[in-house]
Amino acid sequence: MASPRIVIDGYNLIHAMPELARLVENDLERARDALVSKLAVFRSGRGVRVTVVFDGQSMPAQPGRPPGGIEVVFSRAPQNADAKIKTLLSLEKSPKSWTVVTSDNSIVRYARDYGAKTIPSAEFAAKLGNTIPNLGPNRPAPADKPLSPSEISEWEEYFRKGRQDKRS
Image 1 (cartoon, rainbow, N blue to C red):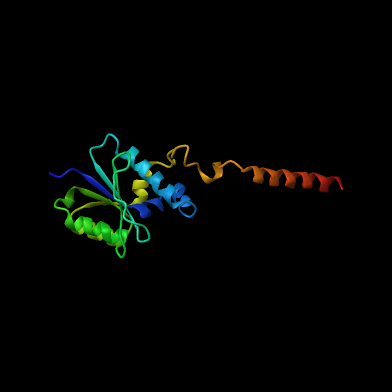
Image 2: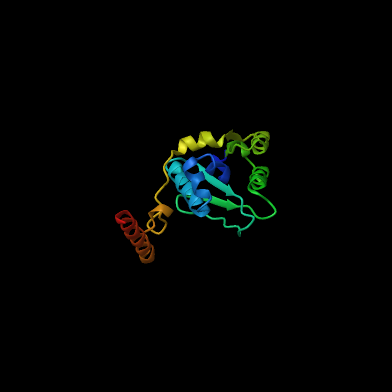
């Protein structure tokens, strides 16, 4: 029997997690990295293969195994992540050992037609928890960036003017 595999509709899951969905607009790469980190924690101690599929029409395909053993797959134009997941299912010899994480009804129906189990993204998100993993000192959250010397000078000037206006 084939080993269990979880295949995840990446952006669908990110948008089911408010703390990651907020990152998407400002730092898409950080949102993806945070999801992969969460998945690595989830996977540890489980005998399961985890693949996360992202739309990648505007970027080169970057398949690989980052730390934690999570396989990250980007679709290639003109294929999107939904089509990539369906292709993976159709090529699999034992899709009954798969669980597909998505809230996209067309993928859910397709996966079930191949005998795979499905879990809605919100339900799987609850299993992952609601904290953003630490991405290391080189990837601080945007709010954690220190002010530059020129920004400090601007704020000092702003507050000096404010005090002068109150004295007048």
